Image (cartoon, rainbow, N blue to C red; front, top):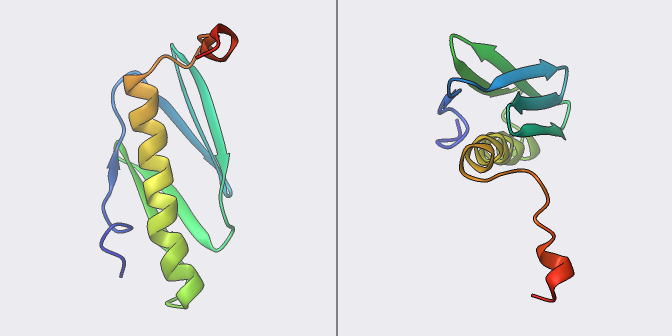
Length: 94
């Protein structure tokens, strides 16, 4: 089993996570993020944690398992640490 994929992802307070088949949406006071994932990967919310599972030990499933967990974890980290509103930095010639 993937070492990365088997770690539960804690859901911080103030963030609402919804899983609809292979789609994850994260919503809170700063805005909303939504991402679709491969249907061979299972995503569940249980007791304040997000759990990612795979259907088999195929090479594709093993690689998608850790990738999916990392993307969801980065979605939560990015939501917590950054404001999701557009800062217009690209309009400033930076």
